[in-house]
Length: 291
Image 1 (cartoon, rainbow, N blue to C red):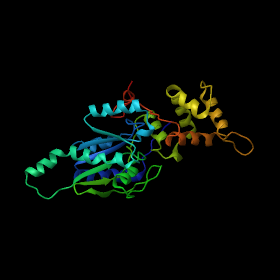
Image 2 (image 1 turned 180 degrees about the vertical axis):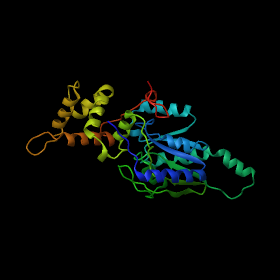
Image 3 (image 1 turned 120 degrees about the vertical axis):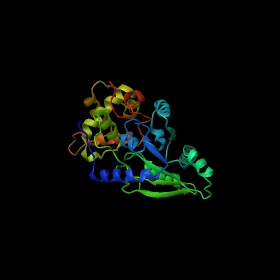
Image 4 (image 1 turned 120 degrees about the horizontal axis):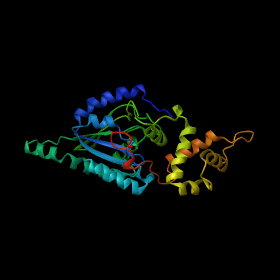
């Protein structure tokens, strides 16, 4: 499975981010809590090397709580401020304001010492890869619809400044991947959460690999959702799920493609339960697979 997807618009988006980040005091990066390592764009680390950093582990309601706790400690040890949230819940998003102010406390105090009376808003860039929930976060945080949302990559295409309060402004940016995904495992995880367009993927192969993962790590979830008994053969397992979900073509032939989409949709929507696809020991911050 070779996934290497870098649409042309991402080149321009990265260039614009490189320009705008010079204006910002802090970078708020959203990661998908189900893949906090693989959803972290190494380009953002390069661009934001001298900036204050906040990481939001988003969609925690879909991730394995114990694994999320491990990732929280992992990124804290790297020096990041880490927040965990379901960005659809506005009360959870509002804690970002205090985190931004705390991260920029030195700047605020420096301005006071310089006698700057007028409040200079903290400028915070919101960044992340496609489909980690940036637009949902922005809309929930602001309390109204300011950014387009959608359960597919590439919804946000332009940068926009949003005034949060008299002392905090946010810059919403399009989701960008990095030019080379680095490994098959990272590509698979990104595909599973929907950060890569399904139209260019081999959904059958991806679904089989996902079933392998579930058998090894969350077999009870698999059994409970699809009422299955035998887990020893992934093709047979996929066929059993196909029949259980009544995915049948005209003429009575099993519709395996439909079943694959259904399984992926169940995972992406959280219907399968709280599942994390990787642990901190599986991959490091630079997206280099460990031996």
